[in-house]
Amino acid sequence: MIGVIGLFKGGSSKSLLTANLAVARALDGRDVLAIDADAGQNNLYTFMGMREAGEVEPLVSVSKLSGSISKNLDGLRDRYDDILVDCGGYDSQELRSALTVADRWLLPICPSYFQLLGLPRLRSLLIEANVLRDRFGMEPLVGHIVGARLSSHPIRRENEMERLRATVTQLNEPDFSDPNLPDDEKGLTDIDLSLRRFEVLPSPVTERYYWRDGEEAGLSVLELKITAKNRKPLGDAQIEVKNLYAAFFDTGAAPVEVSDTAAVS
Image (tube, rainbow, N blue to C red):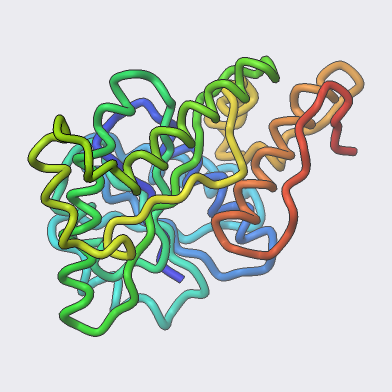
């Protein structure tokens, strides 16, 4: 499977999520290749390099790619069980070309006003990718959105998720009878929903400092040690990683609710 993590906004925890998903997949016995396609940062490459330097098992193969990378990805598809591609937080050639061969696209979105404003541009990108994929007989790609950097307060977190879900519903199903509908929205009437569809995954990720605690050692959240002192916050962070893993890789596992009493032993 080729999974792409990317959008037009920086600071959304793309690299950290990619690193954690790659390590979680490797811990599950899969042969994983992590690709850093963000020439401006190379955070994923650095993370995996620190992991290798510390001889942390399992090691995750990592590579850098730039430019039009679709042929490279297709050529690597049969050599690994899974390939995860971390793209920069901007409109890049790497992101556009990767989407033409990807099996899954993950978009970490913090439901702030400005991030939500950028969703129509991402929809246009999805349509362009799917039109090209259709020419080659490929299945349409769905934009899988994960609520990222959310509040850890349960009520506020749910409010943020409701805002995100409502925005995505409106994005997928604009009211074409609205006389005030912008022209670019009216132009969607001839474009099938399957070519422009987004889904919000039931696996939000909150803003917890434990996500950053393992960076320097190349450790995923799942590999941090739970103690009596950190059992609740770290346990909740690990649940979030496992929920996102199950949703993104479509394992069929039901999400575990993060609550005031949730913990992972």
